[in-house]
Length: 382
Ligand SMILES: Nc1nc2c(ncn2[C@@H]2O[C@H](COP(=O)(O)OP(=O)(O)OP(=O)(O)O)[C@@H](O)[C@H]2O)c(=O)[nH]1
Ligand SMILES: [Mg+2]
Image 1 (cartoon, rainbow, N blue to C red):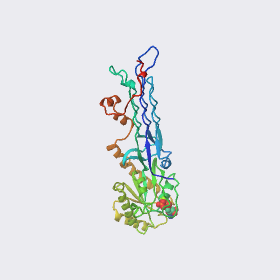
Image 2 (cartoon, rainbow, N blue to C red):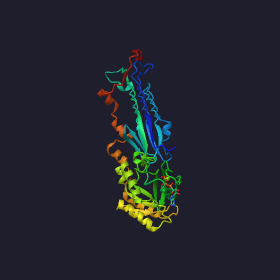
Image 3 (tube, rainbow, N blue to C red):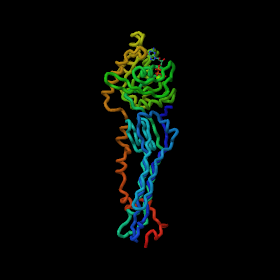
Image 4 (cartoon, rainbow, N blue to C red):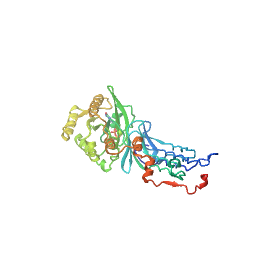
């Protein structure tokens, strides 16, 4: 099952509590405090993996909970840190918290900490001083971050195939790449996106095939525009139009309208237009259809192919490579946002954010100090 959105509850581990303990040793009647620190709670970490291609697992496992840190103990022993929970997600997974992007995993094995584990609390050993020789206080561990994370898969590819149903998008993908999409002579054969790698000269081009669009897709007609998210992050759109269409110009304009309704950014993506199924079609008809598209967009770059007769394919791939090559950096608006104004959660940043615990304690902004009222004075051998 191809699932491209999911909601999961993530909960990082709680930090372990600091210990309140005093040395008990024979011949040392007044053993000092020796309560160790609590261990850090485990993080929930996402790892992008090329072996994972859908978010379906999250439907069955909607709670991701990392291990708590262990409490400290006597003899200044620190508690063990909780284990991080490592979760594989498909490449192209965008993670949001309250609608804001907190991670965007675009490369194989890229990692992001989604929920940070809480710090462990200091044990009483840290609170000794010349005036406080019997510190009966220790810190509680901090809770780990916990929230509902929204996951969205947006495929990353060089080329996105768009067009009406049945124009030959999947056939094109199947003849130029290693992909084996379903192909049939009826609309909406493709109901989930397919990826394939095409090779031309010495270049590899990653192509995403999505279900066909129809007029009104942006209002939910047909399969709607929900699959357009999978071509949102491609560098070039390959717009396929059936040469047998009554009016190729209108077909072109209708799909352009749907793209524009979905996103202005997507509509301004570099584009190559291709007339399909042209084997055995009179050159005059091909020309007329091209002319009709040019009337809608005089700038359109139009080529013709026949996937079944393997005509014009290398030319189209070469042209696509040219555009990809001159487009430069990956088109990934969301990613740019992440870098510009949304703090990416990484270990280093989060660690920077954390003030040393003794500082927090001195500023008195922490109310998680536990006192050991119940710890009687016989803890401390008077
Ligand atoms: N004659 C001819 N038929 C083709 C060519 N390419 C595709 N077809 C036929 O067109 C029909 C639709 O092809 P698909 O590749 O499934 O079309 P699609 O655009 O992926 O369709 P959806 O997934 O429904 O959006 C099939 O019957 C194909 O065999 C071609 O070059 N020539
Ligand atoms: Mg298809």
